[in-house]
Length: 112
Image (cartoon, rainbow, N blue to C red; front, side):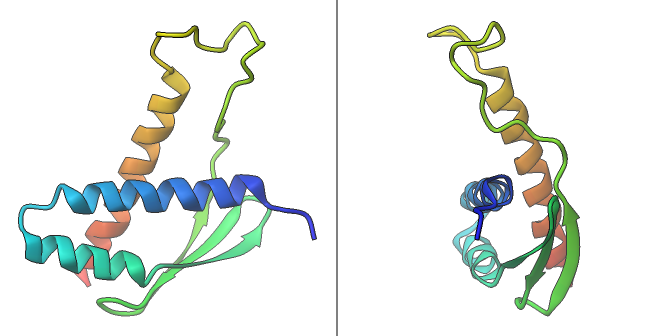
């Protein structure tokens, strides 16, 4: 069975961004509630660029997440690769995307 590297990377980066946002919460109680929510996240591969997201806390919620055309890396031997010591704009763009998506999913949980 072939690995689904894009989907696995998508899930990993989304979960990492969500945990970082939870750490920024205003209180320990809110942090714990967000971590409990994140722990209930479940993902199923629904297609080549589709992931079925669900959670069980605070209530059951499910939705399909379409994976956009993200680039998770740039080969180091290409003209577009960042030079050593420079800002990696691809990494920044991905971090911003996942932070925004994770924030939306966490806000939906608080609204349940």
